[in-house]
Length: 370
Image 1 (cartoon, one colour):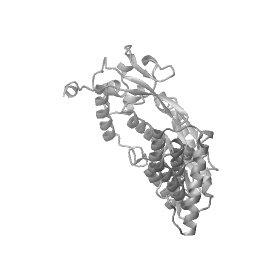
Image 2: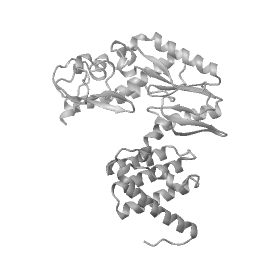
Image 3: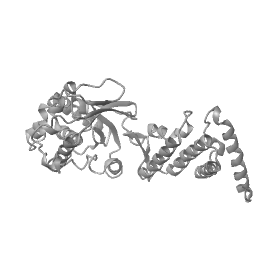
Image 4: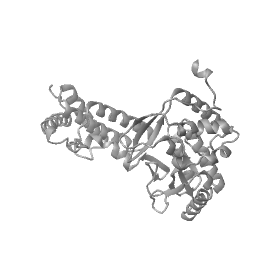
């Protein structure tokens, strides 16, 4: 009730603490704001208003279904539209280079005071009061914070409006996007190149919004009949269209079971949950069931290496046999067992012997005594 009575998006929020957290994602790191309840209240309401007055285009998938919709849109353009060429193009220096003066015009009819005090939050940038810092590298002070605030509820929809304006200026409004990541498609190499050039010209000429740039992803001459990636998702052409699977970097993230580092029980459980979630995200991946089984077998074996009780041994045997069968027995079953390091040698040997018994019995059509 007190929050509601203090609501005023036209005035600055002063003396409310906020924090900066250092967040790691992939190989990168960035500072993200954690705001107090009054700022979050203002931000969420203004973000909802912005989504109503500046709704993202259908091809902007961040608020329109996310990556599953982006993948489907790319596949449909390839299958039905003859768009056989394409490449990922990222807008670089996106959030941190956005300039304050351009926002008021860009976000109209949102009132300028609301842009000042909620979207840009001048008071936060000028506030000399102490705030918490959660991280291991020197944090920026409020007075030198630049660009849109990572962590603000308004920043994603403001970013979508910036992307929409850049593509409109380039005449490329049908480009499929996910946040500041674009997938530029065409019916030939030359058409893709021309589209990228138009978008680059739009980015360069619209200097009011910030010093943005473009970065192309790797490709085989933009040829989508060759494997390609969009946001670490790999697309592979088949006889009837495109199929999606995790990209190489994503697949490496899930091979924790084959890592030499020690994994705690909590890390193993979290990895198993991620693998199952990841599998559900790629329902049309033909090898997905086998890959899921392989990763789960590696993790089950690592759990047994850590704690050699009977329950973990049985679970590991079951997981390895399931993985062996899921691969069509194309690999020897012992190849599915991770090394685990010298400390795990005895338990690995015990697991090998147990698996030999079970597989020999299965092939002979007999049972295994407990």
